[in-house]
Length: 592
Image (cartoon, rainbow, N blue to C red; front, side, top):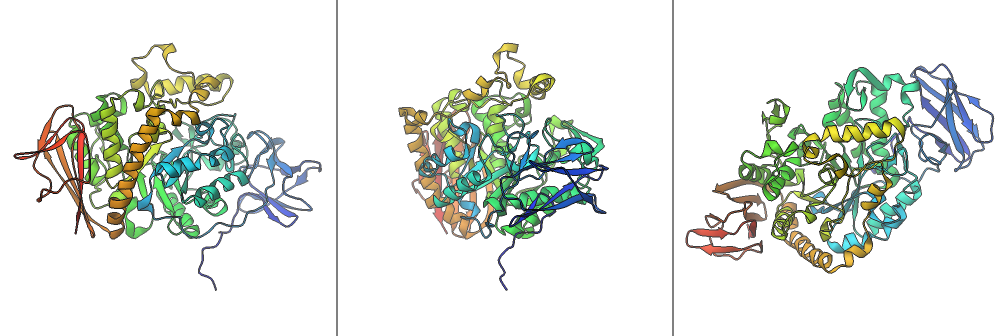
């Protein structure tokens, strides 16, 4: 008997066996459910004791359109594998693919991630068009791509966080088979592939679950998106855990990034996170499972528990943004008191807030101790979709910061041992904006405009009403599209060459250290200068940096007069140590 992982049993979505199909719908609040297959009379479905309705139909081939009628209301299949068009329309019966099981394409510590929005990564904005750009990401030095959410959303353009049919890739991007082809093409080039998934809410339009499955939600637990998803309900948890495993097994993704798990609002959240990690690891034991979690709970990433692999480290981003830009408004304010100390802590411990009072939350404690976690339990970034798109203009740092500060940030990101992530185009320092955009109509469209400004009021306060892009205007979306020719311009070529060098240094020095096993980390501060040391079984990585605008000096970070393997800015030996120009850094690799 084989010990290889097997595709788990499924309760949601249609089952197709040859030309016989079984259709199922969880609808505990419906009196009558009918299956509507195009070209056939409606078929009544039978309810079981758990609230599932089902019916078997012979003689159906893949590609047949269907939907359900719940007490007279036509609704899509919430677990449809494909939609014909938008969520309000017909679902499509899809042939089950061969399962893509086994291990990831490479170890996690080798990840250098490009975060990608499919709709704006190319002028065509499709899975197939992105295949033609994969050589660029491989040749630039990336080893993985992370797709922003692709689950079916209303309209033709969206960041992806308004998905409502979580099993169906949005048809604006292509078909499920075209998404599988993208994953296969990335793997053929040595690129791992991650997918961002959203389980804390459904989008505001196109979600029909409340009409026939009210128990999916807790009306007494409000969230910014409406009633909370009820994670105390085992069937509801199963809908999402099955979905996570589906992306791994049916498409071959190497991992998932779980959006804003701190916003899981009901008491079943901890059980849910444990179940979802288990479901994913049953399909792919070494899956890259990455959290976004403002609560900074280090226990989710302990290696012994085999739960989650890493967490997006917003603390790292926020403090280095404060240092490089001088901006201290909005969610940067809690990092402005002593950003140098916070930078040292972010580098060697991961989280800045580890149980201390958090100013933005009325002084409540935030976070847990993280010093005992290895560096690759954190994903660090200078920019990502959020921190570009949350700015009023959606502008990138490439258009706002001086070149020496940009070079400093990239150096620290790429040559410290946390896993680096860059937003598409950042490798070439493209200034292409990435403002928030969506495709709603009527009152909902205006509510999105107003809500976006209210959510990030501190960032928008200094801008006139007409100074920022309208998220509903198609031109806002078009402004975010990356033009392939932009990468061929001389400044972009120079930036790409510098990034390739950093990626190669990371391959040669940090990968072998990380593979040998992490042991400990510490830091020292001298004025505005910081020395960070990370100890591994195979040696030590040492970085000296000055993250401030004035010259600084630090004691010599290594005993011998060894030359650094790389530096940025002016770093020179001084009588008492090292003299570091503003926004400069150097790194040493000391064998064991």
